[in-house]
Amino acid sequence: MGVSLNRVRKRFLLPLVLFALAALGAAWFLTRGRGDRSVEFRTVPVERGDLVAAISATGTVEPEELVDVGAQVAGQIVAFGKDRSGKTVDYGSAVEQGMVLAQIDDSVYRADVVQAKAALEQARAGVLRAQADLGQMQARLVQSSRDWERARELGPSEALSKSDFDAARSDYEVAQANVAVGRAAIAQAREAVSQAEAALARAQRNLDYCTIRSPVAGVIIDRRVNIGQTVVASLNAPSLFLIAKDLKRMQVWVAVNEADIGNVHPGQPVTFTVDAYPGETFQGAVGKIRLNASMTQNVVTYTVEVTTDNSNGRLLPYLTANAKFLVKELHGVLLVPNAALRYTPALEHVAPAERETAEADKLGGPPAADGNSPDTGKASHDQGFLWTPYGQYLQPIPVSVGLTDGTMTEIRGDGLEEGTPVVVGEQSLDEKAATPPTSSPFTPRIDRSKRPPRR
Image (cartoon, rainbow, N blue to C red; front, side, top):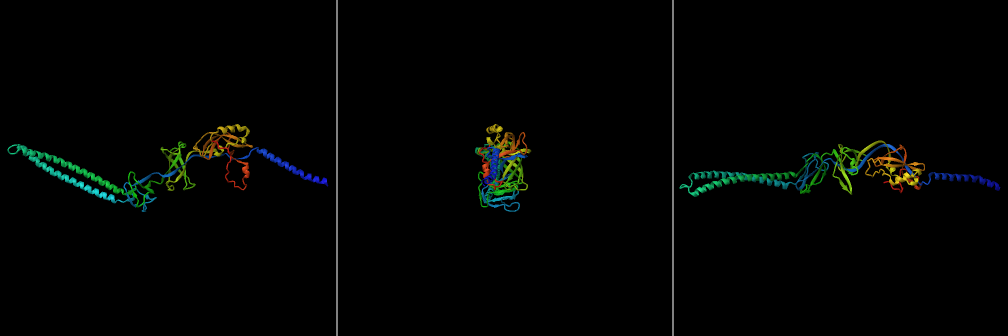
């Protein structure tokens, strides 16, 4: 009985031992297969595609030509004019050149005109009086001239005393002087007329200024006064209306960083988007680069004018635009994410034969393309490294870094092919094991690597 029991035990014990040994062997094999690696590498394949290198910047949609309509006289706004449709002038009103926009109280200026007209009539009357006085003076000159002629014929004698002779001569000379004075009085009166006419013209012009008219045909984009408001014209003319001449042609004023301005030139294609129309891209071209740069927080920017067609009237003034200046366009090139060029593995994860290369790369590697770099959109042609799995390790692939669009970068290298897996990050196996299996595959993962990106 005891022998039989031992046989049964041996029969069941032997398979258990063999199973345990197999499990230990498998565990040893798996552990040996992954070495001491405690992370899992995230890879993406090298792609072949098109790359559009562009400079990104923000700006504001502006009308191509604006006219600021001001007031040249002071007074109270008493009425607004009518637009093309017969409605009261307001925001968005379409007006023609010469249309009345607003009316300023003109009672004071109308009184000035009446007063200037009276002064002009008075000056004209002064001319008539001076002319009449000159006529009298000329008549006296004729009489005194005749008396003097007779006195000279008689001479001082018993018929004409010495005193009478001198008196005749004196009367003649005084009459001559009076005629000259009369002529000067006429000239003075005529100048007074000219002054009065100028004063009347000035008073009339001020009266006309009380009627604010549109200097151009366009659309009112800003009305800055209300009825009853008093405008005061002093050193600066107060602005009443802002008129856009032609909203079918718009501009985008884009602030471009000084590091990128060298790649911007007139005629360069530009695309831009506005928040008002999500998903829609508008086309434009560089028209002008303004040379008056501005500095904000030690950052120098230049204003670039981008012209665009707005025949459909969809673009409104002062929309914020996100613009992209096309620098270069490549087709059918090898591309990798910028994260692949920034990634540097720990030395223990590098194949032993390549660790010297990895150490040199850490100490003095070239800067990788970065979407936040001012060099976005430029060809750096630096030398860099990509890392690809090699058994349980990683091995470097030397590459030449080309253009970048801020997300993907053009690369070239010997033996580099489309589909080659390259490492873009890593994840701790412990962290992966702690991740619930029900988590969505689309949930973003945080790279907890303590190694900083290459600079």
